[in-house]
Every structure is written in structure tokens, then in C-alpha cells.
Image (cartoon, rainbow, N blue to C red; front, top):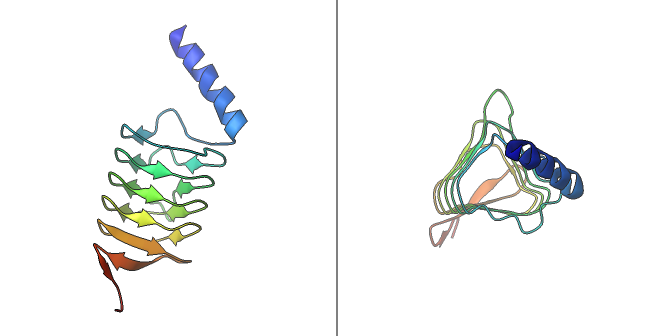
Length: 126
């Protein structure tokens, strides 16, 4: 009975928020979703602890691969993380970015397709 009520609560909040976050996702503790509207997460993707996802974020499969997010990753509103990519710990993904390649730990990625603009305190190209 307890499992059934949990599933019903999940379905209720999925409808209310428009989010698609399957119950069997591998999500580390401390996930923060301040505005859950429109978030889509592939059931096989991995999300590390203490990540931050804003509205309209998609973490999905492409080309047979599944994304992996490290710990303390911030993902801006409308960002898409697609395919067999790895996002390192403490990385930042800019709003509306489309990430198709790996992002190293501590880096900031922005744009369509996303490119690295900052690595651990330095600005690339400067």
C-alpha cells in the first residue's frame, strides 16, 4: 500500500509540474529543483549529489548514449544534455545550452552547441 501511494503521489506531481522524472532514476541526494516545470530526465541517466536543475532541462539519450552528471553540477534553464557525455563535478551549464560533448570538472559550458568558456577560475581565450 505504501508503494502504491508513493506512485500515485509521483504521478500527481508529474502532472502538476509537467516534469518527467522516472521513479527509477539514479539521482544522488540533495537534488535541488526550484522550478520543476518541464524537466525531462532519461531513466538510465546518472545525476550526482547536490545538483541544481532549473526549469525545462532535458537530460536524455542520443546516439545510444546516456549522460552522467557529477556532483554539485548547476544546469541553467532550458539546457539540454544529450548523449554519452560526462559532466564533471562542480561544472556549470548555461541556460539554453545544448551539451553534446564532455564538460570537465569545474568548467562552464554555454551555447548551441555548448563550448567551454571557463575552466577553474580562468577565461578561455584570454
